[in-house]
Image (cartoon, rainbow over all chains, first blue to last red):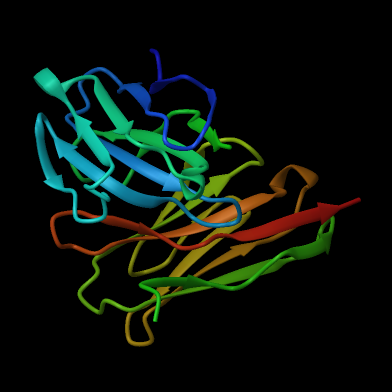
Length: 113
Length: 110
């Protein structure tokens, strides 16, 4: 069975440009997460979806970040405009309910120049 | 105070050594606890859940101390392949938000 799929794996952009990341969770997983991970730090939650509803977006910088999960399956995370400090790995994860076992994708590594 | 704090690393140990990691959490209402493992430039993966009575999985033992609000992970007979970053994770129980610690890096040397 396929795991969580993310794209792109790597993205290099100049500051003020927009960028979008895509995530396809494991089939049947109703909960989807976007995390941000900086070097040497643990993942930090940006947004959590249960089906198509964003149930926790308190940590999402809404002035420049947006996310959607249409139809409760795939999700897209967008940054517009990107800033230098946004350089990080953006991890998508999914789970079936809130068991605590998250399955992560390989991440999308963003470099903002 | 951070919600989840871990021992600062890195831990450099020889093969065969026993090593222990500690983690403290701030929310006394937290109910679920986990250890994740993250290899260099890879995604985190669940290593084991932590139960109130403590639990063991081969060379790995996880313990929970609710009174002191800390969780530990003990690795016996370290292998080279145990080299990774170990992340302590706490479910804050407010709608199931999982909070990760900053991770403790372990390097096992021959």
